[in-house]
Image (cartoon, rainbow, N blue to C red; front, side, top):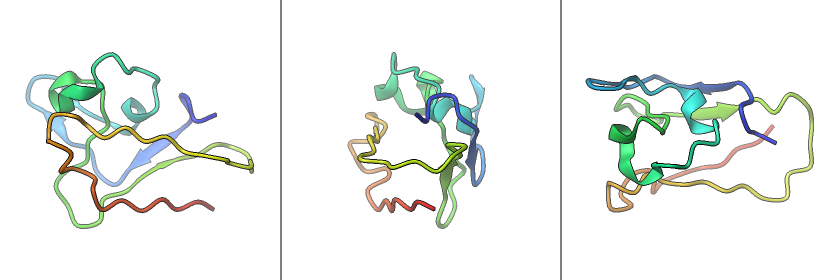
Length: 88
């Protein structure tokens, strides 16, 4: 239900090789290289900041029974460990 829906990120990290790693990379369905972090060019990535956020607009009110999140695999699980899931 979130695939390719409008998404927003508190800031956008620009990788020196791949360019901006914007919010749409977080819900575009590309799972081919989720374990490579920013170097894979397949993840959304914010700047280093206090309380970064990422949101997806589903467009309509829905009953959500579950959410699957995939953390980047190149940081030994140390990124995104203090994560809050909010819904409106």
